[in-house]
Image 1 (cartoon, rainbow, N blue to C red):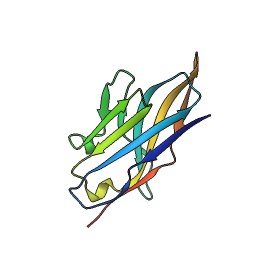
Image 2: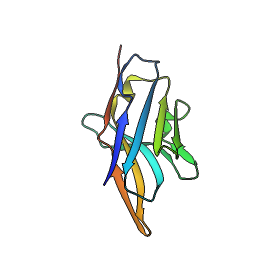
Image 3: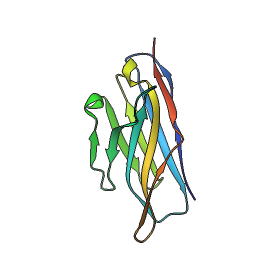
Length: 120
């Protein structure tokens, strides 16, 4: 059906940068909003950044000024540029997309997650 595949996670030192990518594939009409969430060990999954189909974006307070979300609709891909990373950014990062399968049928899909570890 629809798959979201994330990439770009890894180990980085404090102050470093990473760029996450999430590509959607499968049979669908279009993608509406897309977002990145993260889940640290023992904590709930929380929204990091969100971008609408018209490229309007918003961010969690904890990442404002450091993270940038963007999308390439021609590639059905959303990105998360993460700069000035801190140890508290360590988490599994998940991509989410509201996918229009057909007229009046919108379904939310999740990626499998990618680990980001910020440590010296």
